[in-house]
Image (cartoon, rainbow over the protein chains, first blue to last red):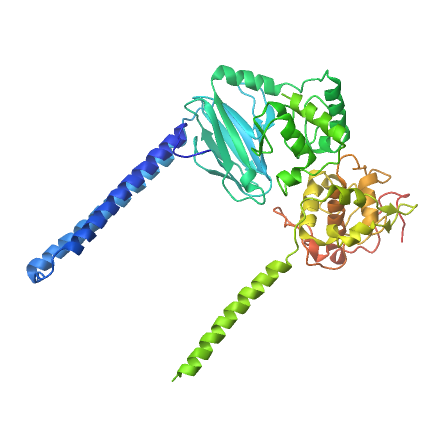
Length: 311
Length: 200
């Protein structure tokens, strides 16, 4: 599960240090206050309180000092926060640009062409090369979502009608889970995203493979599955590049079998889960915009076989 | 001076008012239209049996449609889904936001094939001559019902309480539940094609 303490990217590390600093300072102050309070409680009574000119001067000194110390601490934390925020924008040179569109309840991911690979579209899984600055252009097509991969960066809202930019830079390879962080409706909790950070070579290979059209099936069951997919309403909402399925309202399924999860992190990708999802999305993720498409059991078998081969 | 009796009467009536308010809120919550996300496949199958008249205008919905309380026309959730489908399936390309364009308007107060749910479902499902494509293979029965309900609401002459979600962009007409057709009524239908539909 994701955590901001498990910082694996530049921005996340900056934010972690800021959090540690603020928590440290505040803990120290709290301990001092409690200590003073305790000392006052256990102090023996009976002595006459100080009075006169001397007491006045002493009280004034204490007030001056505490105002000064408070001002310095608050200013210090503000400055620390300011420099940390400024440091979040890593570098000016971007190696890669990815456009992410949040929608109820999945992520459409479009890679812009660059020296790292061609232009292509995928969904719910973001691959990035380690140690590179990746510019994310965040948009939404329906309601406000928020892009949050705690191990790599802070949150950034995705607002309909405008574009927010966030820079990701993973320092170490790994798979980092992200999650929509702005309540966006029924299935907000099932709107997850996987970020896979890999080295340049692996990333390039992945990107080249993603840009290819879907594999042409040679198995008869898979061919039958493809025919069902094209004949039924599936093709009206989903794209499988290289076929007549060109719908754009659902996730691009050209390489769905190669993704780690389906339905935005709901289930691991297996033939069984693909079949279960196709058969009854409204039970697995009530309210999702994928309808129950009536299929016979044979058609379901064929479609799931086809989906599984789309690696 | 406020006596002890008056004070306790005041206290009791304050408690009673609070309890009544909470009870009212709970009651309204209870009466809220339940959302139906998953139409049972058997019901869905039955909903396909809209019987259309020979001339393609009007007919009878299946009994299950009435048993469910005409879901697509009355529940705000279905109307909202219909509104989403309206943009998903590109209706706006020909019909605009309801005012028409290449295709007929939904809000001029005229229906080429009548305003009944059956006609609208049939238009979407099977298509109509002169350009309306069939969505039989592209949408499920449930989706066609939702879209038809939304279009019916657009062309309604009377305002209703069930409303789909609001537009984010500029409004080009009154909101769906405020009967745009009643305000934007045209004296005669905008002619689309000489052989299409009845003329006044």
